[in-house]
Amino acid sequence: MTRVWRSALQSNSPLNSERALSDADRTQNSTCAGSIGPVRFQMTDLQSAAKSILEKCGTTPGYPIRLINAYSISCAVRDPEYMAAMAGYGQNYADGLPLACYLSWTADGRPRANLRVRGPSLFEAVLEASQGTGISHFFLGGSPRTLNKLEQKIKQQYPNILAAGYYSPGISELDDGFIEECLEAVRPHPADIVWVGLGTPKQDFISAILSERVGATCIGIGAAFDFVAETTPQAPKVIQASGFEWAYRLATEPRRLWRRYTFGSFYFLSFVARDLAARFRVAETNVNSAHGNKTKT
Image 1 (cartoon, rainbow, N blue to C red):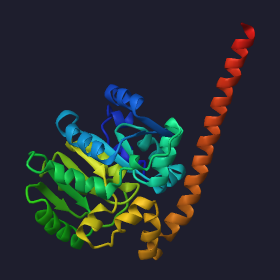
Image 2 (cartoon, one colour):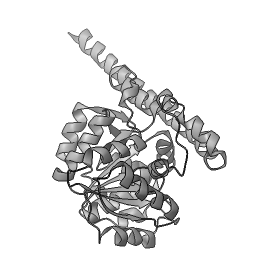
Image 3 (tube, rainbow, N blue to C red):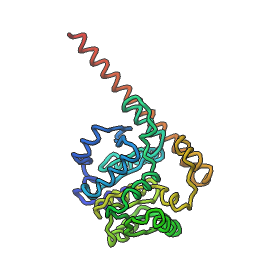
Image 4 (cartoon, rainbow, N blue to C red):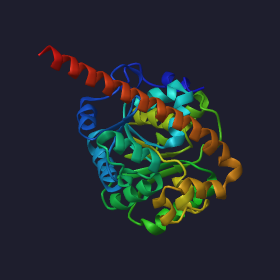
């Protein structure tokens, strides 16, 4: 199913070639890089991420942004195409406290919770900061009921926002028909930012395609539409900050989420274990090499 996304890209697309990262990406990643396996992350806080996104609207058209958590990693472990998408063109932010702490710990030995870029919080921060700037937004995903309530909430809370449009494509497989439906919904309403709330991993494949085909910054935003529209309860801020938001969500939607958090946690932890093992092997090789060179001299 996920191979469909590559066929929807142009043949010379950076998303569909060996040139996965632009020179600007490589420079930026080298200075604020965190990684797990082949996937590199922007190690930054929420406000800096929001500022970067708004800046990209004027300088880097056609750019996908992914908010990655433990469940995203677990999906990628089982789907090489998704792993390739996450490791490719665009930017990744750590949306999940365990992932943010692991990335910061392996980067510089300090597990820092403030490097978490929580998707719904980023969504609201960008909407707030973009008021009066001329930056326009399109909202793709969610149910018709959720989008109706989201539109009302945005008008109330962000009265100076430029909303290009709202569209609910419904529940469907990621196939050519679904991709074309999304393209036909977005194209007549040009926007600087397209927010995609279709669930993981579908939203990240669609964001990759839309970013190239419509030239917008496209962001997979998960459950943010439901939270802001208040069709799904959001964890209190103290729980969000504690790292146990997943437990709150599991308690409120057990039938839908129990598999995600049970099996997803297993795949995530196994991937972390392999990543740690690879790091230790590299460190051991470097120590042995340094010792050998010292012995020779």
